[in-house]
Each structure stands twice: as structure tokens, then as C-alpha cells.
Length: 300
Ligand code: GDP
Image (cartoon, rainbow, N blue to C red):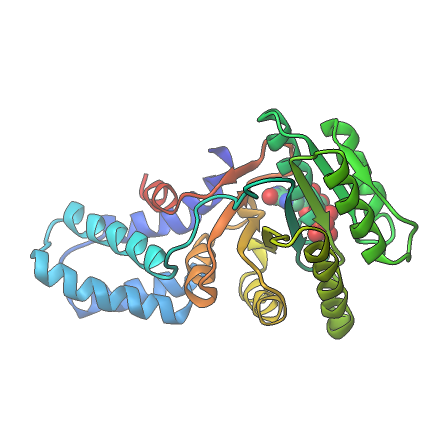
């Protein structure tokens, strides 16, 4: 769990220090807690919700000791995280038959390629037959970068010419995946949000091709967000969410931020599950996200 050290030493340490200085639960306590939560990127709305529900629960449980109060905080954080999404599937929604198609969207630099590389390795290790489609034909070097991961992971890849039609790569990929019985097809996409309309049209076209070939595809559209960009990540996420059917979040670079509260903010403002977290640049630095484990970890 080395990758979470920064969240733990930032957000977690701040919480622990706050609780260590704890005298009694009064109005100052809640106000200081609200400030701390906001500074940790939990977001204003969630900070208020959290402190309101803490006020109630502390009274209800007559929590007085440091231990009781921190237990209530943990309980409420997990509860708020879980309440933000209903009836959702934990983990990846796999196809009942045929290839499972996972599209990755997000701005350049967020960590799409790296995440695909890590996830392909993990799926392959589970015995799955994995195919990558390099449909970011726009950014120079994107295809080569994905090809490096494919080689390293020992998985197959479908590519197209630079500046070529990304939809053609998607078509070749889905066709190959079907004909050659792949278990999973990962589709890398472009991330030039500065040309939003074009990008969203391109993503819609890719989706249409996938659905034409496999009616319930894509099975997941994972939005990759860089945790170190805080509020910016949230704003980008809103744009993608409005324009594509995002099914979940991969939050990368959580190893590089001391403000792990962004996990809770994303959840609360987007109502999307964080499915994976990136904790470094190496192949094994990807973990499935468990909210309870994350929150408990902060208080270690
Ligand atoms: P893309 O443009 O979205 O495909 O982004 P890349 O996959 O190329 O990643 C951009 C940079 O972020 C690269 O230098 C990656 O090594 C780095 N990166 C990606 N994920 C993580 C992560 O979880 N932690 C850290 N520290 N770096 C990451």
C-alpha cells in the first residue's frame, strides 16, 4: 500500500493530528473539521454534508472520546461514499458472452495509456486474452507508447496510421476481438479536450461502431482522472460525463497527492464509482478501489 502513503501522510495525518488535539466536541470542533476537509479536496458540499451528519450522529451516539468520534467520522465517510451511488456494480461489468469492451476516456496526461498497460497486465495474469486498440491517433507518439505496453505485457494490439481515422482502429479492433475470441478489448481514445466538440463526436462515433458489432458494448467507459489536479479533474469529469456514458472512474497519481479527499468529492459530485486507483508508474501500481479500506487507511 506504499502508494497511498501521501494521502495517508497528508489527508490522514491532518485528520489524525486534528483528532490528537481533540478536547471536546463543540461548534469550534465542527468548524475546524470543515476547514480541514475542504483543504483536503473533499469539496465544499461534501464537507458540509459530512459535518452535518457528524453533528447528528455524535449527539445520537453520545460520542465523547477521541476513539468514539473518529469511529463516527469513518462510519459517516464510508456511508456518504456508498450513498452517492445506488445499485451499482462493484468492479468491471463483464460481458455475459463474447468480448468485454472497455473504453478509456480522459484528457491527455491523465494516465489513460499507463492505466491500460497496467490493467492489461492484470487481466492477462488472470488468464484473459487481451487486445488493445490504439484509437488515439491524434497525439503524436500515443500509438507507440501503447505498443510499448502491449509488448511488455505480452498482449496484442491493433493500430492505425498517425492522424488516421480513430473509428477505423476501433472497427478493426472489435472485429478482431470477435473473430479471434478475445476476452477483453481495451480502447484507448484521444484526450484533446481543448477541441471538445470534435472529441465528443469522435467518441460517439467509436461507441456507435462498437455497439453495431456487439450490441451491449462498450461494457464500461472508464474516465481516467489525475488526482493531483484537484478541482480541475472534477471540471473535466463533468464535461465527459455530460457528453459520454461514463460508467466509472480511474483515479491516477493518488501516490502524488496529499489531498486524498478528492476521492470523496468525485464520488459526491459525479455519482460515479471510483473503480481503480493508480498509485505509481509501474505495472503493479494499480488497485481496485475499496472505499472502506481507503477511509480506514487514512486513520492508521
Ligand atoms: P495519457 O496521456 O492519458 O495516456 O497519460 P499517460 O498514460 O501517458 O500518463 C502520463 C504520465 O503520468 C506518465 O508519465 C505516467 O507514467 C504518469 N502516470 C500515470 N499514472 C500514474 C500514477 O498512478 N502515478 C504516477 N505517479 N504517475 C502516473
